[in-house]
Length: 131
Image (cartoon, rainbow, N blue to C red):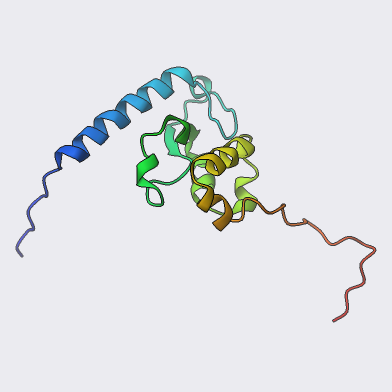
């Protein structure tokens, strides 16, 4: 079986990776706890993930924007990346993230439904349901 050659990184990609590393280091020095659940990285010994609020896939131009980055524990990062708003609302900094999305990527804010109120958790008792 013939192996395909490894693609070389472009100069532009190399520069982006260097800038991303700088952002990650600056954020890690500033934040010592998870933004989603406020668990301390120092006492809990969890891995911390550099998380984009607006995904790089949807807006590559925001990849290096400082407002688009937070540190999350792995569990909170998975919740945010799930794109299920009901799960995302459990994060302590949900409102902040939504404000960042509204500011940096309003098209995503409206497309994903962040402008809509949360769904009711239960049906009020005074409503008659006819089936």
